[in-house]
Length: 226
Image (cartoon, rainbow, N blue to C red):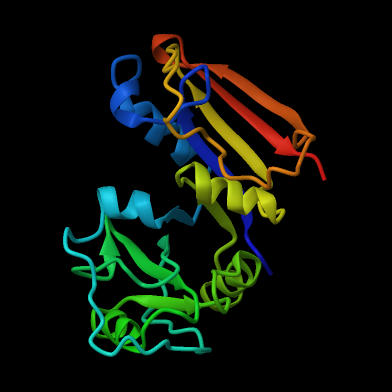
């Protein structure tokens, strides 16, 4: 039941993903244009990306600090397209259940406060509780397929959430818009970060297609080899 998952990212030649840096060497519209061609019915980001671009400025402050524990999936409504936030302990505050026309689904762990889930419900936001201390991504993704009918999910997160999905075998394809620039800074996140340091072998990929885009960018598509 789980969706087909494509990690769609924009990066420099050295794999860095600081959008502010990359503005000098790319057109942001091209990332959206290539993403549209992937025909996803949902997209997902982690807490940091959602906090930077979509959530309210002030975080949610729980009055109860009482962990919600196991909860059924809350379907506020069905939609043609979804925006999905992975927010382990329920920190992000939202003004509505809609992001640019996509219905919002929040994925949290059982550590999220019960009044956080109440806030989501009152705001018309769907939610999935999966995992005791951390989000169980495998369970969460299966629930997205089962309860929302999501079949093609675009993973557009920061390096750590992308790495977390890859670590548990949830990335089926990589769609990389490689732009003609080098970042070079050590502290800047890469397309995939935070993988198990004990892992010594690269994850193998098989090239699906390559396309030259505007301003000497390359759109690379790979299948993840199982």
